[in-house]
Each structure stands twice: as structure tokens, then as C-alpha cells.
Image (cartoon, rainbow, N blue to C red; front, side, top):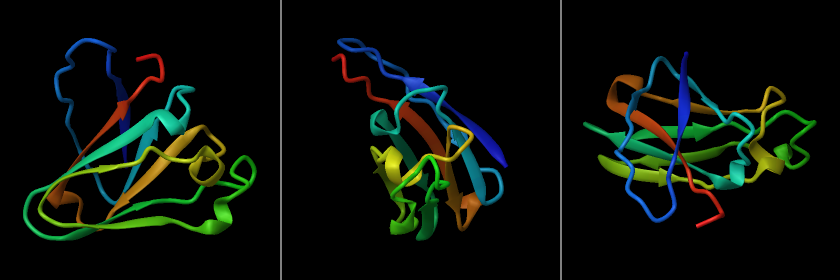
Length: 117
């Protein structure tokens, strides 16, 4: 299980592209109190289509967790998933859980898109 730190994008500036390698199936995005509505996951798939699943959150705090997981069939290339609804995806420990069907095939990064821009 990998813990992926969120990279903040600075308004009116440039930010180097971060990259994290998926480790196993479950990857934890450490939100550090950042609202999920301001987080986007960048997934780069290198060789073949794979499912990337954003797990529904715990209820509570996620009152809309009953809507279930978000599953994206990601083809080869770069994909941006999110931003997310806290009411559906927030885990009780304040994280976002992302499962990758073929971890060796995917790199992940989490980006914070601040509303202050």
C-alpha cells in the first residue's frame, strides 16, 4: 500500500509534475485536511487498459457513500480523475482510497487545485 502525498498547485505559477508509482492495489491519498473537492488524481497508464477505482467513503463521514465506488476503465495514456465529493468518497481517517487493478501498469499523482486562483 502506497501513501501518495498531495502536490499543491500554486496559483499564477508553474509546478513540476509529480509522479508516484502505484504500489499493490490500494493507494492512500493523504489529504492533510484539503477538501476532496479540490483534489484531482493524475493516472498514467503505460501498457494496457486497467480499472482505477476510487473507493466509496465510510459512513460517517460520507453520507453519500451508498452511491458506491467510482470505477474508471483507463486506457493507455494520461487520465485526470476528480475532483471528488467528500460526501461520497471521504474515509473516516481523512484519506481518499484509490485501487489500481494492475499496479505495475500505472503511476499516480494527486494534485491540489486551490480555489484561491
